[in-house]
Image (cartoon, rainbow, N blue to C red; front, side, top):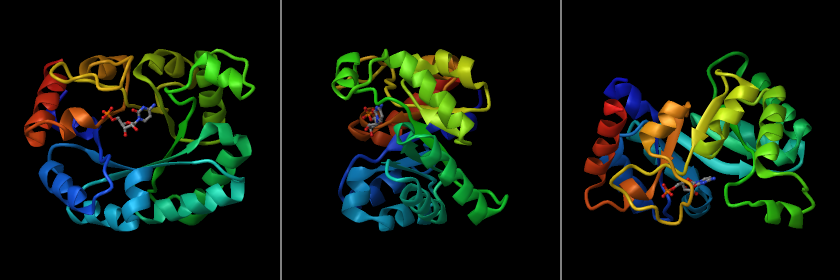
Length: 239
Ligand code: C5P
């Protein structure tokens, strides 16, 4: 894999509420990573201005707001997300088939075959366990639910899923090679685990078939974030 291909795969998680950090990260990392993930913390604090700042510097955005609401509300919010010009955004597959299909239809109506944001579904959050699922009335094993929801998302026209790297083989088998798989829970060999429990290295995740790797603290907390991002690209290219 070339360095450019490796860079395209890395999504830096902008886990901050400070606009000044966004500017710093975007400037420091724009030519080192393929995308910046804007999540609920940053979007709640700074709104679309954070997205525009990244785009102004030439960065691509994954808007990680995990929509989950009635179909019409999610569809309309999704059209607004796509109008911002983000490359990826997401919703919860647990919102159901109609919520996902209505969203895809609304996007297709709005963009009419033009290039538009890709939509990802979150299946089961990696913080969930069999026990937490049982508490909310779901009596199935986590991997079974992950595959069930990935298949449902694909059927609704969703472009891919966010998943643990461990779930890649099951999802690939069920949904094929064209379905995007975006994986957090990635730790380069030089980095601390932080609160992540079941991790893979970037090379392992790419070899397992991950299309994009979401990496936050191993880059953001490093004394030299640009150098840490370069090290990750070295690892992927070498692997
Ligand atoms: O710092 P770290 O690399 O652990 O950041 C991972 C990012 O991916 C964070 O923004 C986290 O919220 C997100 N994420 C995750 N696990 C999931 C879904 C999202 O770590 N299952």
